[in-house]
Amino acid sequence: MMKVIQHTAETLHTALVSNSQDLANVYKKYTKEERRLLEEGIHARQPGSLFQSITVHSDSDWIPAHPEEPQDFESFYRDPYRKTPDASHNTIYIQTIGSFGEVGAQTDQYVEWLREYCQAFFHGLSVKLLPAVTVSETGCSFRVNSDSHNLQILTGDLLQFLGNKKPKDAFCIVGITMIDLYPKDSWNFVFGQASLSMGMGVFSFARYDDNFYTRSYAGRLKKRLEPKRGDYSVFEGYYTPPITGTLLLRSCKTMTHEIGHMFGIRHCQWLNCVMQGSNHLEESDRRPLDFCPICLHKLHVSVGFKIADRYEALLHWMEEDQSDPSGPEKASGCRTAFHFPKPTEAFHTSKLWLRRCLDTLYKR
Image (cartoon, rainbow, N blue to C red):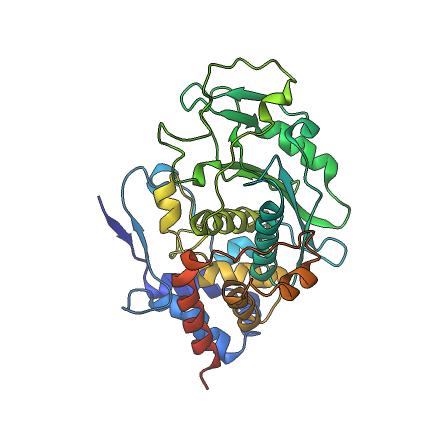
């Protein structure tokens, strides 16, 4: 069952601008070029538009499985519970939990790439890495999943740990791990979990390894283990997926989607957008890497940036040559003298799209 969700131009215009005079005035603060780009979304039905309608592929996709009220710009703007960064809470903190990839230099590099990507995506905010912690340092509960035979850690315990670690100037703190997660005993797994009111979330990239669902997945425990509570030795040398372009792309997408929620941006039902919900990996892979105009307007009013500057920063991240040892190392203070080329081949489509957006913005 393939179904295209097509809103009328009028519906999309109202979702983007609102019929309310004060919000129409907020929208007028954009330059003529920025408005031209944002209004491309209203013409999503036209072939070649920068923004496309959402296609639902099956009943197991997010929108049919989780009916939600669509959030237009006005309902976002007037939400009394949404959090906005301010001068004393303007940093996004990333906390790695457990090992990432081949432990050492490449791990540092991978996490630094994620940090830099978030810095470009949430242009205008500061993104910092906290010192890595082992699973045992979090004191979390864990189990062996009876289906996949791999280790999983409990999200609630990790959120509690992050809450205690959250720096004073944090807008939010996000925990990332290569170990699978579960939210409670009755659930098989969860990709991640967040507490928006507390400005924190945790998510796992374990299932972004292409082999995760195969019998040959190297993370499957070879022998039946019944680990004792508090015996974290089972995590020593635990398998982590190789760092590939696809893993980097999926990780960037998940991080920005989850941090987007921290601003009070709900799942997008207007246009193809990184904020669409996803029930499974195939659906997640179909989502684009960036915001639709309605969600971009929500982020813009929260942070404030020139849209072209944000797109330039993202394009620079995708095109930056990592082979120059003097460049990224000096800029990031990375702890390693080794350099691995950034695997950005999976970002090719996004790169072309960003160039088209910039062409639209720079057209006189």
